[in-house]
Length: 403
Image 1 (cartoon, rainbow, N blue to C red):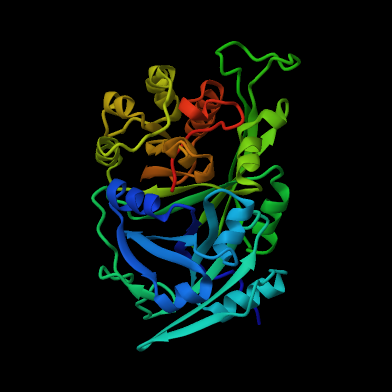
Image 2: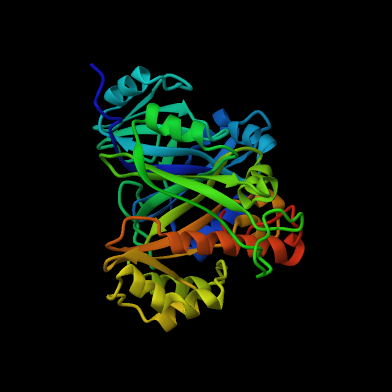
């Protein structure tokens, strides 16, 4: 009998494919204080035709791969996309029960399960196709298994532990994807994974020049989106999905992401920290670049917080403004978040891709925040209009950071 839910416990890891592995290594180790916890063995490198290194911080694991052979999976991905997320991994209670659940609901398996033993420990995993372009979802069952995955060797830190991170990075908070139409994605989360609606938002901005939007004007450059967040009702793993809105559907930043990425895909991953003020202060000191927020956001913030019933923000609002950290929530439950610039803007390299990271601290609020969501959207739109350096053209758009 199939399980009543997909059996997710939480995130296991995500797999990022790049053309420049050393640039990624520098980003994770020097900028974000991740530790190198594992690497592909010589046998695995020879068999797969790609080099892979795993970086860890707290519970966060990112496997970064680069092709050594044009026949490798990483090379095939990069032939269709810039650098980006190729797969997301989830820990599950029982792989057998997860597979039975997915089979009953029409999940498409990409291969037979992988199994491995590591001393007394066992590792089992299986991948399924998704509606997010070439992104696969991997379900992993670990039972006292110390290594990252079959064919990987420990780099000395130990994958099974939680490498301490000076910024307090603990875990993945949520994942956001962009697509030209969200209904197939939302239906897949619901019908195949058994996820349920958690939050949604729809809006259209005014023109980024600051002038009121004229819906019928051909010069209108504002755009909009609809976003729906789905979550697993047991583990509370959350996925947000964005789609563009008309008018100016084809000029939307969501459409531009899909164009730049070569398909629908993962736009950003949010990492949870304990003290975001400390984290961002130190990250900026190390040269990490973040999205800008207009002064008007902070001028209106005290009134907006009062209207939201938030009276207990422990951080100084002046400090949040100085560091460009966003605040949202309701009824004395709030969250603090900030978004890095996308990789191609950070590295001045189109092939670095449109992916970026978010840093978030939750102070009782588990939602996504209308005010912050819109502030982020408008910040991206302003960057698309004004640009920066070699990436100033409207074709290139957006701004954030990734690897």
